[in-house]
Amino acid sequence: MSFDEDVLKNAREQAAVLANALPFLRRYAGDTIVVKYGGHAMGEAALAEAFGHDIALLKLVGVNPVVVHGGGPQINAMLERLAIRSQFVDGLRITDAAMVDVIEMVLSGSVNKQVAELVNRAGALAVGISGKDGGLIRARKLTRTVRDPDSRIERVLDLGFVGEPERIDTRVLYALSGSGLIPVIAPVGQGADGQTYNINADTAAGAVAGALNATRLLMLTDVPGVLDENKQLIPELTAEQARRGIESGMISGGMIPKVETCLEAVRAGARAAVILDGRVPHAVLLELFTSAGPGTIIRAD
Ligand SMILES: Nc1ncnc2c1ncn2[C@@H]1O[C@H](COP(=O)(O)OP(=O)(O)O)[C@@H](O)[C@H]1O
Ligand SMILES: CC(=O)N[C@@H](CCC(=O)OP(=O)(O)O)C(=O)O
Image 1 (cartoon, rainbow, N blue to C red):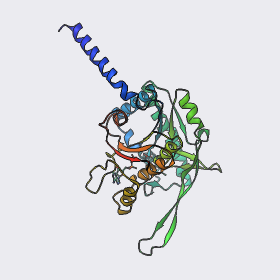
Image 2 (image 1 turned 60 degrees about the vertical axis):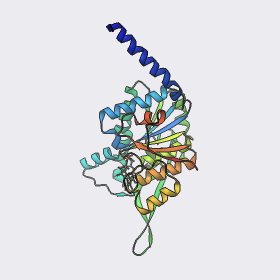
Image 3 (image 1 turned 45 degrees about the vertical axis):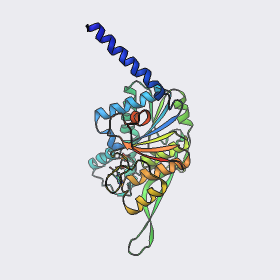
Image 4 (image 1 turned 180 degrees about the vertical axis):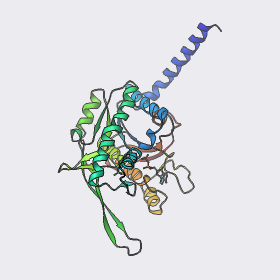
């Protein structure tokens, strides 16, 4: 085959691949997909670039992607530089007054702009905002009760300025998405009194997905999904299995807010939530458009 014939053959093959992809790419046209992009998944440059491409491609094929990012490792690094120690309870960072300023700086500042830039570099137009912009996330102080295993006495744990979404005002998201832009959200909220709250990024993503009645909430993380005692992937998790998993300790640490969030998101209006491996390049496209993107799916009952 001559050089020209080779080029032509490749081009025809590429065209066929594109044409074959059409029914898949149409699958979520017009739908809203909320993607939680965890701090761990941002580490590797090639992976991050692939993530940016996935989000840009979603917009191109008529999907309305909304990104909510984390930044736990990035906050840890900054707090370490400032010699401030963190403590976690059930995957939530106890946040005092000095920390909340640093956390807002990291999340709404450097990380938010980095994530928006990943999408922009892929040729789409992302706009980085925090939950404080446009009144997006009205937050209230989160309280946790813990039971002492010996005395069985319950006590309320003060997590400081850790918040939970109280109300989501979706207007800013519709305004951006409707103008061809992709919202990229930092998980920081504002209380009725103006106080800034640090919100777990999973929780923020779940609240946004519920309020938007998203077709999917995709939770990108650093494990293949929810794993059982033998470290095997659980393809589908019911509310009852989740409750037992948390009680038995099979589901622990950062996976607790993740699973709880998925359950809450589908209860609040999202069609399904998937916990999947963000370390796999193009995890978002694999999950949405192929049968090779297994994670753990949590559906509305
Ligand atoms: N049953 C489980 N299945 C999978 N991961 C689990 C489970 N229980 C606890 N984990 C832990 O949860 C972590 C994911 O939560 P987290 O570190 O908060 O992720 P991210 O930073 O992506 O939000 C995993 O890396 C794992 O160590
Ligand atoms: C209250 C709380 O824990 N907030 C988180 C917010 C960032 C986050 O959730 O980031 P990842 O998704 O990367 O873990 C924190 O301070 O680390």
